[in-house]
Length: 308
Image (cartoon, rainbow, N blue to C red; front, top):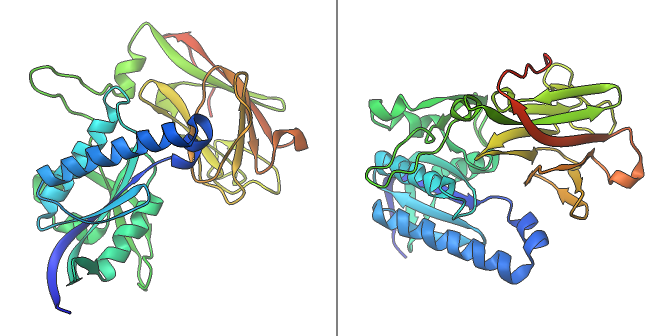
């Protein structure tokens, strides 16, 4: 048994929303889509000199000798998932530093930190520890912004988590650009989503997302006064031309639409299409104090949304 210590960038890339996918598509179809996404991710990591450490369910763990190569790979993975929905959305977390390598596996504080920030990340995000950020070239640091200040497991002081941007890019030759929210809202018709809760009604445009639903009046755009609601229970985001509900709660969120049965989300996400109901913390049929009605529609570009 040999042990060696080497500086490495550790990346975890996790297929997001896989549990919901099994419910919606069935076991065989969902597994085929997840396997195809994992295979595509492995191809990209190899192309960027990454070394696969292990596959854990629908997640891969990869090491890189270079923080720069790890970041380029992460950006490429997110861009691939953003083109034509050919791959499932992923969330990525990374850290850099001295790691213990033993029998083709990697251990240490850096591994634990990378895994931790991956759990914090949402679909379509790349989160980095402060150590990873400081190991990156300056030009790539300019593509990051501060995401949060947290106390990592085992640490006593708070450190900064950064988010690495990837959205603004243009491929050469047969270019397919990922449209930003500003690009979409500059068109004549834009999608909006209307939320109704009691006497409250609000039309949300793409540039007004993320829009948070929760119990905390200081953090939530729409306050849900219910004992099962978390402080920041869930949020509506706009991604790839549609609104998506992302759950961050303890008790979960239930979603019902006209064409589908009620779906339960816990730390997962679900596209909001047409009309339906969002229930905070318990099933929709348990009452209406926690139920938010939603509807999506087209709105002209001169539509003015109500202030949050």
